[in-house]
Length: 310
Image 1 (cartoon, one colour):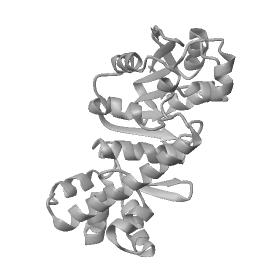
Image 2 (tube, rainbow, N blue to C red; image 1 turned 60 degrees about the vertical axis):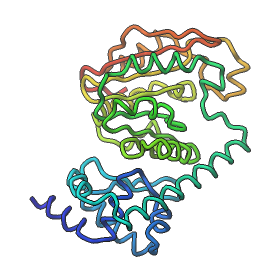
Image 3 (cartoon, rainbow, N blue to C red; image 1 turned 45 degrees about the horizontal axis):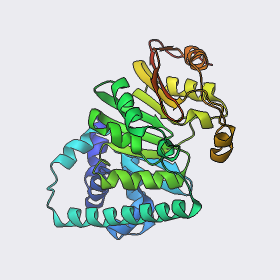
């Protein structure tokens, strides 16, 4: 009862209700919230602190910024927000300004990436059969997923691909610029209410054990200095009987490609993945091959028991 009373007290204030309504549509940083509500950072920081302490918002540091999103633990927030009128002029004005700020941030990040010549979608940059890979990926995932984690989310393409079958999907990436692009992409497609991204290190994920029902790593592992450690950490946050899906290159001899794209590994064979996943407490299903200029392979595993330390 104490937790419910604390959440009710935290939400019972106009500015905090506006903050909850905005953060329910996707993660926003303090700067954006200040601009959207037209209030000073010290004042909003006090309100945000109360909402976080009550368990209604999650606080996510990301470099010099801090992002806030509706907490999965704050079930009461959803009930409160469901009673707010969608056509309230103040809330509608908040939403419009927050959307404009998000679009401007994504556009700036996009221009920076264009100037740097970065490849946002590696499968397409490598000329790989992206539609076939995406179809195989959807086939390999469960038809309904309560909570999904995409490690190395990049611009959020995978989150968009599987959003229709997830109650909540979260992507993590080390790049703040990529995260800005992903947030803009998800907001533009109306997916920010159930798909979010945050900055995190794949070797030290900021989540409790067994937090997710499915975990994906798409075109990520070949950049890892220690793939075994990355997979062990992915298995740690996977629930019992949860699905772990790795999409990456099969073994190849393209040294030029590795140098040009800074790949650490020339693809992976089944024995490597079976060994690493087995050590992480996961059992590997037969892999799925997608032929192309470089063959792509999907390894699907399930965690039948608690993962053992690597």
